[in-house]
Image 1 (tube, rainbow, N blue to C red):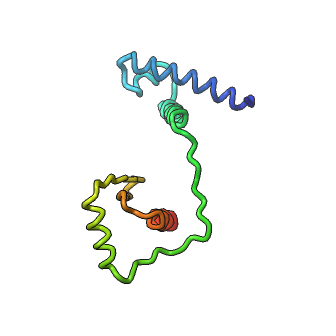
Image 2: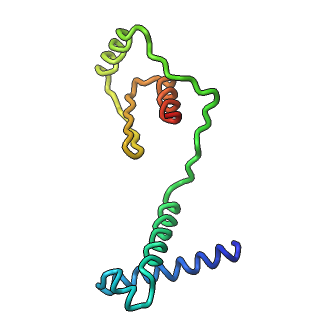
Image 3: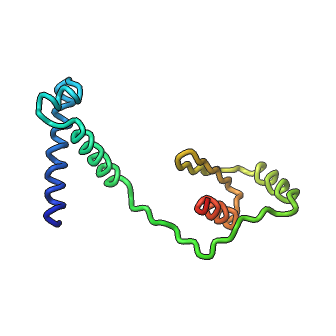
Length: 127
């Protein structure tokens, strides 16, 4: 670990202690910071960094998907085939996966083909 990383970790550890002291004190953040001669802005800055580090420690690395030669989505000319496919899938037991990112929500049924899923990913990626 580099010296700057060690300093950062030491400060983060100290601020983590401060967060607990503030919570235990029963005072507001502003009152506690004033009593301890600490900046409220620094308090929230280090609290954000502590939360980010905590979340990063819980989440696995996200590996970006590399899609080569993205193709635009095409809509089949004969939509009646899609209706037949939908009806046959509806009769089967269908498990649905929903992926949400921000205000975007995508639901994919069990009958979706790999090609359709790939097309959805490409469309969202290039949107």
